[in-house]
Picture 1 (cartoon, rainbow, N blue to C red):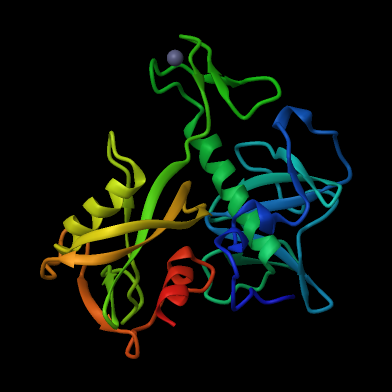
Picture 2 (cartoon, rainbow, N blue to C red):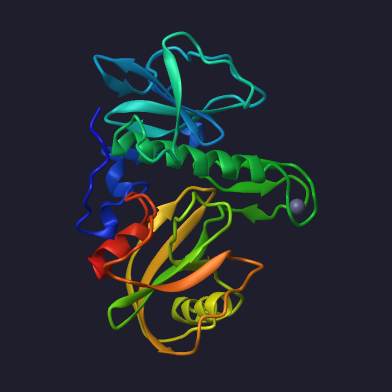
Length: 287
Ligand SMILES: [Zn+2]
């Protein structure tokens, strides 16, 4: 197994982005060429099923190694020329002999960057499948549109397409210091960046300024876009920014955060894993 990189020269190369899928070609689920060949992305929550072979983690291959649950496997495209199918398992499902589940959120996952990114893709797809069975306009069931990931309502005919939610994440700087925040549920002493979802009518830069002000009481200026990362927990696009301090004293929004404060660049707390755009921004602008 190749461990995840310690350094990313561009946000494009962060895990979960298509660049890391290493030869994956997305296809519509009704284009399945049929068994028996193929590889499996089998998820139990945020955990991916893998098997160990010669000290390397591999995706299951050949016949499906588990009993399909309520929903049948779903063809999602080809990876390195082989059909790739996704299957969601219940959290109580047993692990077949010779396999193990590994969390996509593990700090040092036993999988390489392509497997991690494919696991994330499977998570986004299963999230869409789960949340698109019924029409949000009239409540009827939906059916797949031929050759697409979209679905059509059997009642009102409305076409639904996968929901990917835009979020902003920002590193705010002032002389020798960086603004970091922490949520109560994070590991002890871990801090990260201000982040949040867009509101109606906002452009990304406006969302950055509002989120920083709401969460920390700090005003920012000179908001600049750096790059983005697909984020499959469950279905976001994280747009990363850097901004400069423009005024205000830290006032923590306690409904969202446990803490927010300025850290000196030579005395940073525990930080998010390197696979995230949060850490990419911190490493790029603080080190
Ligand atoms: Zn409908």
